[in-house]
Image (tube, rainbow, N blue to C red):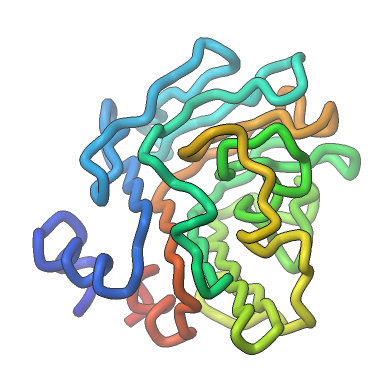
Length: 222
């Protein structure tokens, strides 16, 4: 089932749900802030900004310029650690990085938290890092799979496996230190995130370990 053919159809959403999808934010058009799984929309906080860029056909996110754990937008969809009973998860997202600094890090998509490690657990990475100067300036299709059932984690980029490593126990959902329920976009998990800018679209979160073939299908390679 090609994402290109079924991106907004009910059959595509049902397929995602059958895979354990908890969040799907296409962010596909100006004003489209709706999560297709819950039917709820992102709420902008007034800190930083999240603005549609017509030329890029993506939302441009600017982190708040101050205030640790301020964030740009949130989705109160009831997400909690109880939804990850096996300790497995997959997060996919498309990023075009703007900030280019060895001292600045992205915090694109996170469980609602005031804990820096928890906020990093689902944020975009390139290679194995969220440092902004590690990302290409072109479209980066990022993927991370935490497979607690096999005690490992895998990093994916642009439809290929970058590497598989031993799991990092602090990233396990059972160890997430959440501040209520839901998710956030553009959280200042530390001052290294202040003012970071990037474009973002096609955010997915699953409570299952998705394999490479399915990741490629979701991200439009198959």
